[in-house]
Length: 227
Ligand code: DC
Image 1 (cartoon, protein in one colour):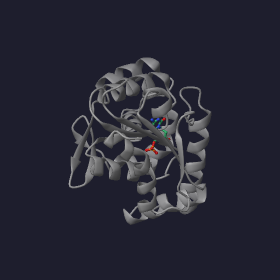
Image 2 (cartoon, rainbow, N blue to C red):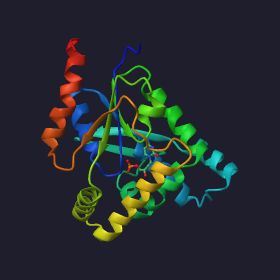
Image 3 (cartoon, rainbow, N blue to C red):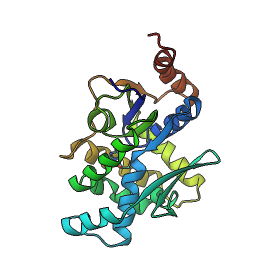
Image 4 (cartoon, rainbow, N blue to C red):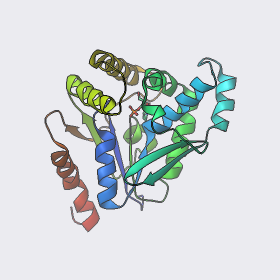
């Protein structure tokens, strides 16, 4: 039995996994780890350095040169690639369009999973992604699987990017989401999959507060020791 608490949140793209994970981490004083951001950082590095996705030697070499760090400042999670703040750049379309391909590469996954397991070795954490409850922490204390109607997800992501001043269309976002859902669920390496013991949270018609209360209703008994 593990001593530290690990809460795994998996699910489709743009389901609000990170929003709920961040809110939980703040309430519970747990460390939040956004594993999607890690795959995005690797994708950004590959793009900048013109790493061909079939060139396994260059990929291995690149992975040794990528150092990912998270920092929590003023309620924001900042993501660093070799000490450069890339939090905004990893959310832009060039990265979003390629991240599914990069995250399907075995060597990339092996390295990311290794780092993620190390991060959750001793501290109480909340980790979100696609394979946390199935591969990274099959023994997680609690597992949630988030899903929502694809149209609702696309609209949410669209509003988010427009607010940031990005020039994108709803159609473009929808097709990127559909493509990522397909690639994430059909890839050979650790496809997106609901763990048998994961609790499903479909938030198509739920506001943030409702989702938080839903998740907390499972977590609170763990903290007080009763069930
Ligand atoms: O959560 P996100 O949209 O930022 O994730 C970006 C991509 O990374 C997503 O298309 C799938 C991939 N990913 C993954 O394969 N495994 C994870 N644990 C997290 C993300």
